[in-house]
Length: 251
Image (cartoon, rainbow, N blue to C red; front, side, top):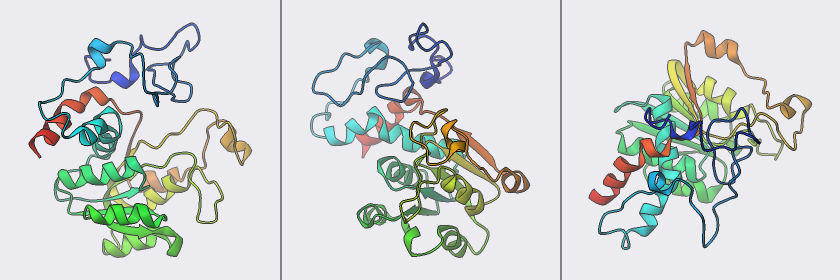
């Protein structure tokens, strides 16, 4: 898997005696291997000879930028790759947390014509606007309607899901299927959708029995009818971090 650039799905990193059917492992990621979360001063890094990334001479001066290569920047980039974004295309991103903002930043770097970011937190939306994205506040009206209005009723060429199964409406009610169904409605016929928001096989605290098994009520009929493609999955960081490092170095 590593040779294929699919490092997130490595067949040897998980403890097969504990996780017999698991491909890949991650720090603190639900159900993925024996490694505890990485938010610590000191951390033992398995397979360090493979995982470590050599940084340029300006590493100390740009450490706040380079630290993003550990996960967030590659994940945002990965989402635009899964969506199939090409220069000149429009894209809508659901979720303006760190991953969503990095997806928006990645789309800017790739030459997207319009980058729309959906959220409802004013501080996040301000950050999205600060990098040139169009902020869409879904607490002030349907995000789908706002996207369609901005795209002359056609919908965005591409869409990114950067929220996951804990998506909820402005009233705080959890709807794991909300962003996925809104993306199907927001993205044009034959458009592409990338999904990096976390969806798990078992929801530990579901608000509905269907969600307990990781299932969502998804509008597959409309997705099929529109001929959309969907790419999903954990980010293969090693497939991107070298080129993203070089982008930071040259900035």
